Length: 159
Image 1 (cartoon, helix red, strand yellow):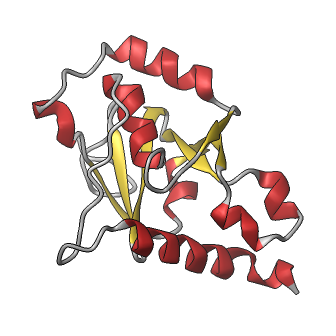
Image 2 (image 1 turned 180 degrees about the horizontal axis):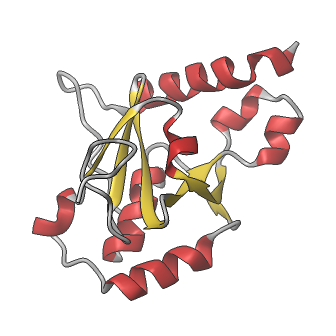
């Protein structure tokens, strides 16, 4: 079935959503009713207006409407590791995912990013296949993209 808002296949519970932000990809896991779970910088650091939240080693697990996470960016369902790992049963994926909502987790662009997080929830394996461009790891671009997105969204609070 096509999603009425996006003209794309409607995600099913447990599907991984890849969101194409400028310079990097963000990942979420579809839960229900057009809502996803994803990692975001802890809100108290945003309220303080600190750019260090972009470089934080912590993230908060958020339950959000897909539309609110997209920020106008394109997206697709991407369960790309289904051929490598057997997904957990959907009810277990959703149970594990809902248990994580509002928790603070360790975050690392290289070893524990949003892609690792959603793959762990779907497959029980924390794995990232961050793309490389000409042999250069993707994480510097991801960091630059996250910094740019932060400045666009919260730059006026820094003044």
